[in-house]
Image (cartoon, rainbow, N blue to C red; front, side, top):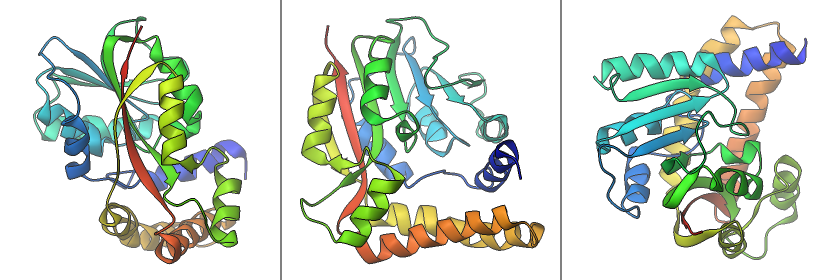
Length: 252
C-alpha cells in the first residue's frame, strides 16, 4: 500500500472520533480561563483542529469568529457538520491548510489554540513559527506529551523517545515556551479520564467496525495494533507521562 493510501486509512479511522487525541470539554475551558477576555472582534484559530471536538467548545465559549485549520478535508467536513448542528456556522470556519504555512496575516491573531497537534511540527518549532502571527499580548495554548517525572522505566522511555524525540519534562517545556518569545502563563496536566474515557474508550467501537471493513488489509490491522499497544503502555505507565496544557502570552 502506498504512503498516500496509508494517510487515507488514518483519516478514515480518526474521522470517526470526536477527538484525535486526549482531552475534554472541561480541560479546554480550564485552559481558556487563563486567557484574558476576548471581544467579538478577536481573531482565534485552532491549528490541527481535526474533527473539531475542542473547536466547538471554543466557539460556544467565545463571542468571536474562530477558524479551524487542518490538512485533512475529511476532518474539516465533520467539523462543518458539527458547526451546523450546534448553530455555529456563522462564526466557525474550517480552512484546509498546514500548521507550517498559516493562512493569516502576521501580527493578526489574538489566540492560537492547538490540542494534541503541535507535535507534528515540533513543540519548539511550532511556538517559534506561530509567534509572529500573534499580536503582541496575544496568547498561545497547546497540549503536548510530556514527562511527569525525572526518572522513567526503560520500556516507556525507549517507546516515547522513538515515537516522539521532542518529549521532555514540564520545566524544560516551559523554558522552551519562554525562549520562543512568550511569557509562561500556566501549565497543567490533563486528567487520566481524558485518555482512558474520552480517547481510548471512544475508540473501542470504532476499532471493531474499522477492522470489519478492512479484514484483509495489513496496514489497517497494524494501525489498530499500534493504537492498542499505545493504550496498554499508557495504562501501565501513566504515572510517568501525560498530556500537558501550556499557555503563553506573546511579548515583543
